[in-house]
Amino acid sequence: MKKPPRPLPWLDAGENFPPVASAWGHDDPAPGLLAAGSKLDVATLVQAYSLGIFPWYSEGQPTLWWSPDPRMTLYTQRFKLHRSMRKTLNYFSNNPACEVRFDTAFEHVINACASKPRDGQPGTWILPEMIAAYCALHAADHAHSVETWVGGKLVGGLYCVNLGGMVFGESMFAHATDASKIALCALVAFCRAHGISMIDCQQNTGHLASLGAQEISRDEFTAHVTQVMTRPAPAWQFEPVYWNHLMPHWTQQTP
Image (cartoon, rainbow, N blue to C red; front, side, top):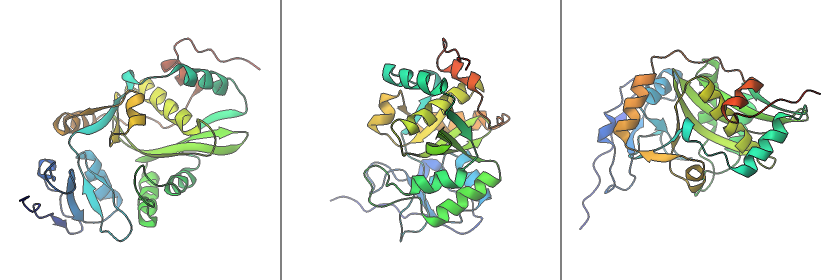
């Protein structure tokens, strides 16, 4: 007979998170689930991410906090730029009508991400209170959008969290072919240019694995986060020269 799961800690507002090692394990109903409750404010989110914890829950549930083991991560130097995507980037980066922008439409990006369900999940996990919380985190310069623009229209993008030398990927969307992939490539190029070696992907998907992401232990992940947290955060602005960090032989064509 399977034993019942351990009680899940309930956090009052302002209460510290329990140790991540106490998260539910593989024998529990929801591996990686750490706690419930607390508030979705800037201070709580910064504390959570600095400890390797993130919120994820559905409508009708309390705020749920997760720290899975293992953790899906992308080492930026191991990113796989497939040949077809290289051709797409060559065209995009040399087309005057195409550009990557950072942080010019954060609220639009997160709302577009909220309009699509997470893989394998019914409905959206980016609820209105989550949108408000990450918009506040953006205003505090801890959350950022990477945007793909074509002909003056936002056609895809992603949003992420940045603390020091660590980037935590959240969600992406596309209204045009490869638009979200272009945004991800731009984020990897930006990270390489600024010496950011890891992007947190949270959960394992086949798509992420095909791009070079891999699972590492929670201990390894949290140790890395602790190590790079004290570095200065980069200035979130994309320069075309950053493509050189992804495509070493890239040259921008002059009009």
